[in-house]
Image (cartoon, rainbow, N blue to C red; front, top):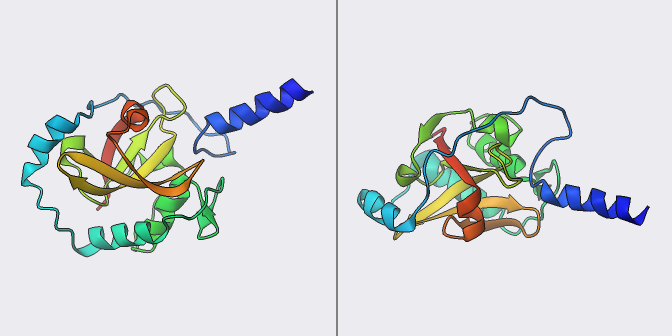
Length: 177
């Protein structure tokens, strides 16, 4: 009995963001390996000035920093990763699918070297190549891409693609703005 409970808890912790509803699984090939040094060079023409909808998306996402993680959550009481994206984009009159895997099919593909604040980053946090996590690009500074997302352990935070965990789990970027 004890082993079963531990196995169930471990399984829940291993899956970052998902849904209780069965859905067709999609696989994605990693399109670009993220390397900070390459980004520094490629994003050198990025001015850092953000305005319009992109600025609004970033401001709205930052408004939720510190909000706790809540499985299937999409309110200030708690968010999962895709719930945060839905809420922030909804506040900016952009409707997004509820699941991170479905969000990964929206908009246009963007090479990670060309991302801008407000673009979306997709990850395979459960291993493999299926989308299981999403974050909103927050800032690109000196080749470092940071993003706002809801982590299972810390809630809504800002992380960096320079972090080994996120770098390894990164799949691709898309823009809906």
